[in-house]
Length: 281
Image (cartoon, rainbow, N blue to C red; front, top):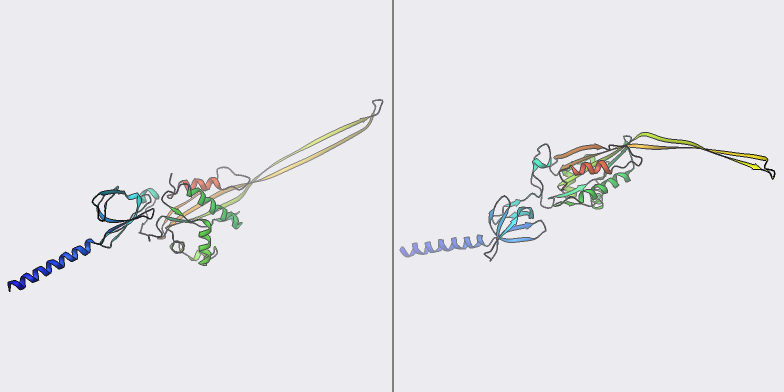
């Protein structure tokens, strides 16, 4: 009887040791923002970073949270790390920030802008140019974000059958899923004819012809009248930013302080981008 109990006890201990060994063989996996994957054991997580030991080593390393995209713990639990500013610093009104798929994380798409001239649809090319300009301005101050280029965004939408006239039938979450991004920027440029400036004037010229005796032989005169009118435009830009949970985190408009003759929108666009939650100084 004692021998039987001893055998059972040994078997239980052996099974427990094997289970612990099998569990210990599963490492914690850290995926960094640069794509590097680290395997080992996480020993501590604090507000600033993570303490980590590589598999088979004893030296402990400190990894900043800002360099981490996600952690897959040995238990199978996945922990995502946000690379953006806290919600209270990103928008005036609190919205529900839900976890996003890893392939969406910190990716931004800018839609072609809507262009209106005197509240009527204008040239599509202006909207496409504004899209490229917004990408160019934001990409210089987008540390930690990936911005889709305009060609990729537009081609993906066309291939999915999402044209401008059909876009009203899609939610921003739908568009985020199609484009594979966490944020979408939608904008519009509005131009309205302002006042005209005009100038006018006249030039006169008189020539006197004389003979050999210095007597007046003929008098020739000519005059030119000219006028010039220049149309000026009032320009405003609207910018709307959505998340992939349909939350609106930014919705602002800005009008150019002065009217201009070429309909330029760069001033208002830059003003809005500098104040949006995705802009990094």
